[in-house]
Length: 77
Image (cartoon, rainbow, N blue to C red; front, side, top):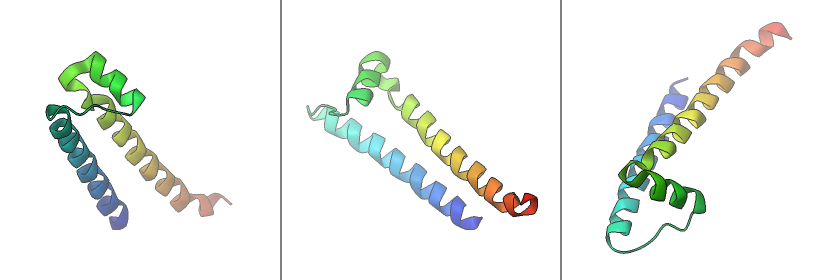
């Protein structure tokens, strides 16, 4: 299970780095090419990263749930 913790921490760190570098690029005059994130940036302004954080949490949650299911599944088969 410790592997999942490490992968989760790395995934979170990469998401934080993505938000920081995106903000730097936007400050330099670049624009977001991902249409979904561009929509969130237009609608939420400086809070655009909230949906990204929610998606990250969702993916990590799915990973933990699938690990728990695969751990207990052999007991029921």
